[in-house]
Structure formats: C-alpha cells, structure tokens
Image (cartoon, rainbow, N blue to C red; front, side, top):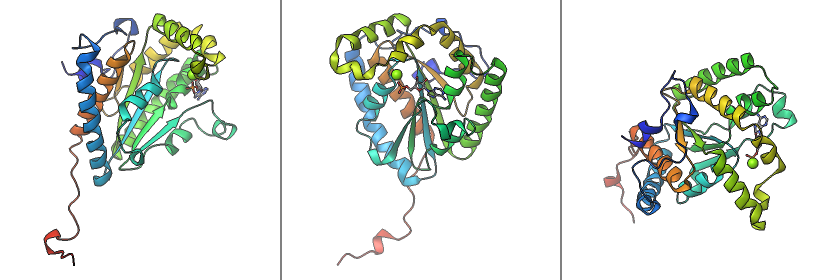
Length: 269
Ligand code: AMP
Ligand code: MG
C-alpha cells in the first residue's frame, strides 16, 4: 500500500489513536533503507517547488500538529533542506497575542495562507484553537465542534481557490515523549528547547489524545486530509511525510507556463 493511503484518515471515520502504532515503519526494516528514498524525495521536492513557483496557479499548505517533542521542527528541517527558501513560508502558531485574541480564531491563520506559487508550513496551526483551549476547558465541547465545522468550511474554500492542503499529526507515544524530554534535560545545549509548560501539558496527555482523536475524526476531508504519521522513529516520520508530499505535488499535474515570446525568434547580439 502507498504510504499516502496507509496513513490517511478517511473522511467521516472515527479515529482511535491506540489503533495507530506510533512506532510503525511501513515497508522499511531499518533506517539505512530509508536514507536513499528521503534524499530522492528531497531532490524531487526541490524541482516540484520550482514548478509550483513557475506555474503560480496553486499553493501548498502543510499543517504540522503533534504533542511537544513530536518532531514538528525536525520535520521542517529535514524535509525542506534543499528546497529554495524563497519558495517557503514557515509560520509558528504561539499563544495568541492580544491583537490576535481580539479577532476570530481563523484570522491569523488566513493571513498566513501561502500565496499561489508558494509553500506554506504551519508549525502548529488554527487547530490549536480546538485542542489546547479545549483540553484546558476554555471552550465547551459544543464550541469546539462549532469551530471544527468552521475549519472544514474554511479549508474547503481555500481548496476551491487553489490551495492544496495536507495536515500531519505527528503521532508519538508517551514513552517516546518521556525519552525525548529526558534526552533534552540531559543535554545543556537542548535546554532552550524545553519549557516548563511541556511538563505541565504532559499531565493532560489522555485529554490531548481525545481532543486530537475528535479533531482528526471530524476534519479530515478529501481536499484537506489528515495523515497520522507514526513518529517515534524520526527517520520514518521524515521519509513518510516526504513521500506523501511528493505524491501530492505530482498529482497536482503542474506545468511550466508557455513563454510569452518565441524563444527561436530571439537573437542575442
Ligand atoms: P511551541 O510550539 O513549543 O513554540 O509552543 C507554542 C505554545 O503556544 C504551545 O504550548 C501551544 O499550545 C500554544 N498555542 C498555540 N496556539 C494557541 C492558541 N490558539 N491558544 C492557546 N495556546 C496556543
Ligand atoms: Mg514546546
């Protein structure tokens, strides 16, 4: 089975994260087997990004969500190494600023949607507004569902306007998060990566898993699918996401634009 269909959440199906093994490595048995594929995908993405920019008809929006230490930053670094930085915008979503908080929750997300010809990467996203705030009971379940309906409509509108949307949930186990946090604690050069909130949020692990399950179940659509990526093994996470990206770009059937002049008639003197 193609990686794309293997990890995709079918629209209107109930997701149980416990049924998705976070340590799966698909068709690969060892990281070395995946190295060459990842390299091939990276090079292909570089060419496809150029085609996206040249044709300037469509945009690609990549949403990255996951628990702390899930690998959102690592995914961006590993997969987009080699892609022209001029063609990518990365937007981190933090606790809303006072100005953002005075607007509807999609306002800041909409402002960050990539323009045609661009790749936009959301490091966290508008989904925080149905996750962290729901877990901390700042909104009711009813409000969370209302927001999810709005998200589905908003993403459908973007898709109809030429934005290819891919959403990745980086699925790690609690044990793997423990291991990663311990590793960061033991390395003074990694302390900057941890904040006290990471330890506080960990206590809400089951609530987060439930909130994610609900969001994944309600907001995966053909034109804005969710992928649950087994992310305990960083190498598999990278190769799986890069493969899905390459397939999605290729399915967009983009073409270089025809020149507005006849190159044969140009004489360079
Ligand atoms: P980090 O991704 O480690 O830089 O942390 C960003 C923090 O901002 C995370 O704890 C998020 O949960 C939090 N955050 C992002 N968006 C929102 C939001 N809409 N409401 C509340 N907290 C948010
Ligand atoms: Mg963090």
